[in-house]
Length: 244
Image 1: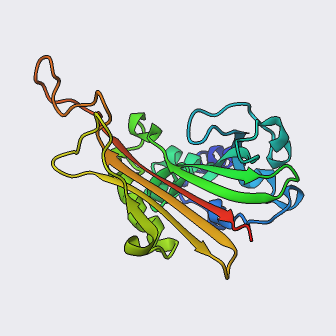
Image 2: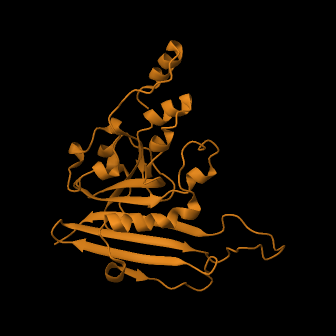
Image 3: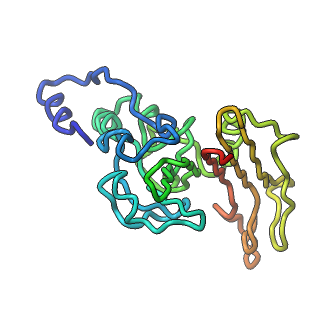
């Protein structure tokens, strides 16, 4: 949040107009192969921390340059979690402005996402990761945001595979349900997709999931009542520098 005092000024002047401003940066503005000291200025994003592959954030960080405080994964990459700048979201919420839908949270195509930058030991950005984020479903103040609910998060897969120029028949494999897993209303999605663009030096990876895990039911097995939220619905998207 860079300009909270601006909101106070707006109320003091009795105006509700939002200022024109440049679009905030997103994960797609990060350029693979960039050294850590040439990454966007820390103020362009917020809430830096060590990531946990889509799980809870770990050690808080001051910025990209502290990536070595994180534990490397099995590929030797250091995951830095970050969120998008929330200045305009804060102002829009204060003024109940309809533009909140474009500025709420860390989102891609209206899907809330967990975003991470992946550095190697030399501080070179080797990849970026986006995983659909279920947390907004449990917030009570998103009535203006129009974010996609968790039950639709598997649909993000169609958008991101198209963006990555993936073709299902060529780049994706349908994974069968494992023991104890079940479909949802007669359908399920378990797709693993990968495409290497040698010309651009990029490797794209996408996983899409929509099914019931073991122990998840449409109806409670004891009393027969309909359950809520007992399903997996998610999309994971990653872009890496392709190794020769």
